[in-house]
Length: 274
Ligand SMILES: [Ca+2]
Ligand SMILES: [Ca+2]
Image (cartoon, rainbow, N blue to C red):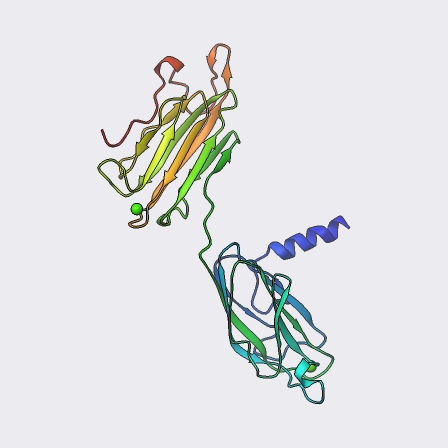
């Protein structure tokens, strides 16, 4: 039973290969084709491809479609081989023969493409291109591990417009040491367009923008990072690594990357604009 579950997990987490019988797609775009395409698909197949919309807008475009032609009284039901498309729990339609679904667009629900063949007569099958637009990249959260990385959304590509992300690094009784490896935000005289606000050691927020690398952050209380971008002009964003140093009764412990800053001399990142 456990072994089966592991296999199911491996199958479902793998990137689809050309002509697989079903699976779940990952990424932002790709192609799906029926098994064996463009040679005949197998008989007695039953394959389901799942395309999560992840809150974005999903487009399926069938670029080739050739299944067995239905004949007889039940031909309108595609009684031999067919492709069905579902959006969430709803059936969008069933297609067969050379009657292609064409291009279908979905709102925010997961789409499924389901193909079934009977015991005889196969054709070329189908090929479709899919793409996903408008999916918000991951942004913000609580960082409670002993170390980690925080980057602006889509980093190292330009961050999207209209972002508002808040990260909290939990000190958990230790000392947070954070180092910026990269920093490039749209410049503004008072950082009024895009900015990163940092709250450390319980002090007032400091707002940063531009492209000067910020100094290290050292804080004995939670650090809050608040990133905002406006509606136009995007830059690369920022990348920051942090670690939590345990604090012993005698002061900062002798493990980790930076034991040189006693609490009395601790600093927070100063503003770029001064
Ligand atoms: Ca058939
Ligand atoms: Ca901007």
